[in-house]
Length: 438
Image 1 (cartoon, rainbow, N blue to C red):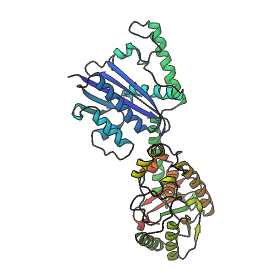
Image 2 (cartoon, rainbow, N blue to C red):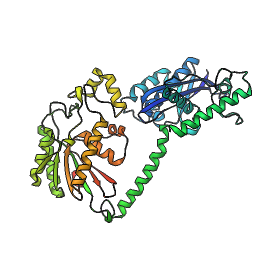
Image 3 (cartoon, rainbow, N blue to C red):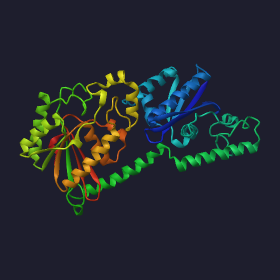
């Protein structure tokens, strides 16, 4: 039985953004590269591109020998852990890709191994070549020389791994042709590094951001409150999601363009409990509400308990989900699959029927935030609003990417807090229990 090694990779310049994948199949015994595949995908996320690279590599191995065993090596920890079953697959875009990959070859003949990125250069280069081709409006075509395809992995260090420039780079290619091809490859690699940084290098930025966040957290712990005293009291926005409506437990899209449902009996009870907790803390100095019925009802309950008036701000309204209003995710997937895929892939994509994109919502929330922070410097204000606005306040405060919206979950009548300081920095507190509110 033949044994192959599949090396696969994928990347996205923007995550989501212009994306591509690369894969190479090697003979497990000799390290010889037997087949290459790469493709520009259009706009996609890193993880989707990585899965597409895995699929291409497995299919290429099956084409060479359907009865072979395959050892997959990737520098994507997520793909490796999910395909081995150690991690659950939660994202709806990845589940079908993983299921498809599991069907290419019998699972008992496929094993997986995580490797560092520096050991996955061949597949990484192919993915970048595909993205470069896409940027030029072209499709990637195989350009590797026969000399490279015949060279074992980790072989002679005298000749660096690089694609050939054209048809002269065959088995009998002249040395000067091979040298020219490698020089061209080096130029392309340098251009890619200098001009269009692959999104995968964002991992280093994430690590740096986390280190900076750790420093800020340590400073916070070492000083009273949430910031050094010389910054003064922050403008503190306490974000309260409205109580349940009849649509909430059914998990239906309920934005600003739908039926504007009122609170259910459960939702009114949740509003009362939030009011009691907030009154017990006694820190709220003003109440501002979205104009929708469910938020105004929740705000009225809380404000009555606190003895405050309610101000309505249209900037706090929920996203308009267009034709998806009142539908479940599954129903949208069935009726508008292409629009849903685009919406999941890009913050600039709007729901079917003239809905509001997450990018448009973020612009609105940022303007509302700036207005409220300026008006309430040094005060604590309760904002009664919705899922997407609250997630957006938190995302913007953390400097997180748009796709982080899909990774947050907010229960009805839940509380979150963002404090904004004079130096422009923000501090986020997520509350599971209202007794922690200060």
